Amino acid sequence: MTLGQAEYEFLSFVRQHTPPGQCPLAGNSVHADKRFLDKYMPQFMYHLHYRIIDVSTIKELCRRWFPEEFKMAPHKSATHRALDDIKESIKELQYYRACIFKAPSEEKKQENAGNKRS
Image (cartoon, rainbow, N blue to C red; front, side, top):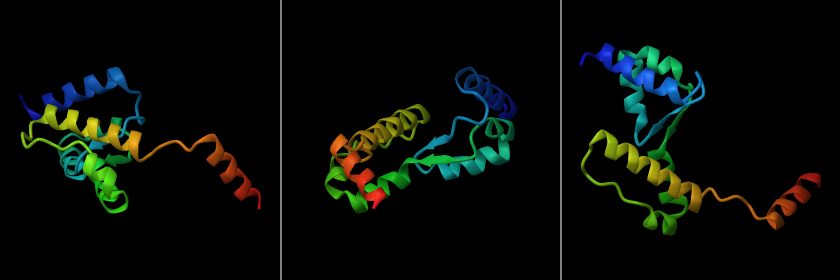
């Protein structure tokens, strides 16, 4: 398969599931993937949102700011297979969302609203 064919396949798949400009590129150390895709698959990248979600950045912040939660985060296997990496990044981001990026309680929301009025 050529790069052009791969880009066509990626783009066809992503277009079925996302409107133009809405889906960010996401994953672990995704900046390296972005450089490759910008150079070799520009039409695919044009379809995506311009922002990226780098799970490894979130992991590093968690390690520094929430060390106890970091210890419980899912660990990545060493297979370095594309589909495994994708699934592991999704699982890891789901963990951070559930354990780190928690919605505040109603009491906390009211407290924060009261502080804004002062």
